[in-house]
Image 1 (tube, rainbow, N blue to C red):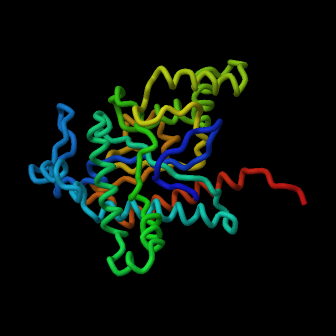
Image 2 (cartoon, rainbow, N blue to C red; image 1 turned 90 degrees about the horizontal axis):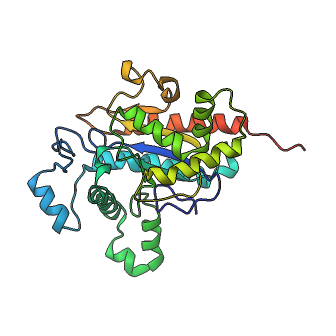
Length: 289
């Protein structure tokens, strides 16, 4: 079964996927509802009650259901499109989430996010006692239908790199995908005659030394079919974003920091991903009759 937002698999050479770069503060955690998630000292800022619940209560609600519902909608739509790819324009490839938020700086903060996502999945799809008694398969149906129930981040952007958010995401694309590693190398070394394969190997070797993620250490580069960044920071316009502006156009959904991710934002993200996937499919060679 195609996984979306679930446990990341082991990579084979040039494994294909869709990627969602996820910010937390201002996206999953709106500013007026909770205090900002990470303070200047790199410590999680949540209310005292939420801190207590997160540590001691299995059903702690660190994030509002509205933003989690919007994120679930994106993942659910991608899953449905992947499983019906035989009759559509979309590739049957998995979609995964990369944490691009400052919450990535500590493993315990990442665990807090994943635990909160799991709890939302349980609340949303937990079957009634009557359904559980009728058939054990019912519980399995509910469990498998929640993209956040077994959620795990595929990776995180470099926790040692603190610059513009756009630059942090681009760094991940360059060092973790064959698509952008090749493009970046060609821009930096336009007269270099080395083969594509040698460039891929060069970046694969660099990845292990960079140690971008403590969650996964993939042995090869991802072949990203489509990607989107969900963030409340500006990733396209402005002087700070001029360097990679062309790369990020059509790949960003900017949220309202005081509202967080909405269903309208989710739908916009789905449309952008669909457009990229369709464009990629249109480039694929067709088999002769």
